[in-house]
Length: 224
Image 1 (tube, helix red, strand yellow):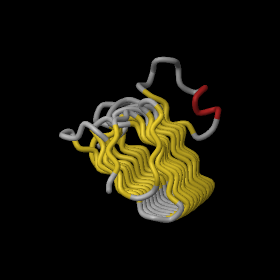
Image 2: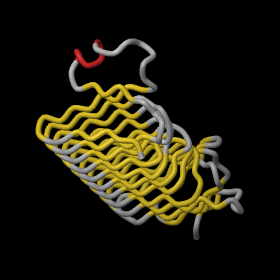
Image 3: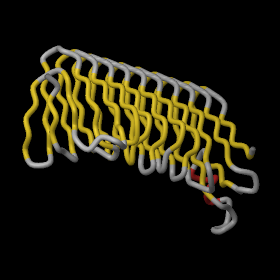
């Protein structure tokens, strides 16, 4: 029988197997299938050795997920989300804040109201909308759209595409790959590729600072 418990935070640990969570505004308790559940106050801990874990949780539930191998699929409006997986794709539809880390696997994020952190050794990172963004990847393309805050993106090998919603600072660096930064019409950026670039412009002569560096690849900063 599925377990039903009251919780504001859910922790999931699985050795292998998918983790699927649906946040539903009509749900007032956590309903879980797969693994064993333990309740400690408002925190529910679910442990699975290999079975797939399926959950339906109230909207705004905080999640902490650790997976050795298996995809993580989170749908619906969630609270603070933290995901750590060694091997497996991560998909998050809607959250208040996100910290997603994967050794090998694609990270796809829809909407994040607050800060979005994503890190992968090998895999693509895509975000549709977020506040401030901190993204690192060793190998894989980074594509962030609708950024409502400062963006810090570092990549060893891969293209970086950033679309900002306002005059926010950017720090983007890749060893091999193109960097493209899109700003709203009317925003005047100071584009910095060397320390001398910033010294060449007086304070207040720009709306934001775009630090973009690529060892092997073009850097394009433009207004749309």
